[in-house]
Image 1 (cartoon, helix red, strand yellow):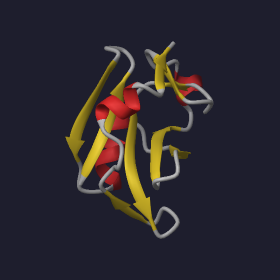
Image 2 (tube, helix red, strand yellow):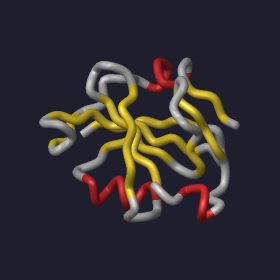
Image 3 (cartoon, one colour):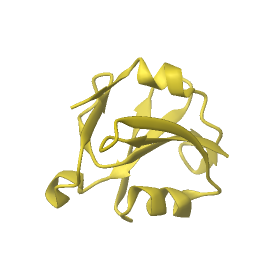
Length: 101
């Protein structure tokens, strides 16, 4: 399914393909995943829950969500987050709402 990978170290956003949560864990680099809702289309930002304790490189913030350190993955969800689906945002739409810190 289509997802968006945020890499603050390079200040980049790229469209990627994932098959499940195990891919998100691999991309973020840690299995302590947390997520926040991003907009009203069912998209969620997945990130390392302990990102600030680990001092991972780079930080970013989407809208008024709390800033995140390290990589993040935005993907669509259904069934109260139980099912992953294609992200509704595109790179340009996310970029307009994101700032690198």
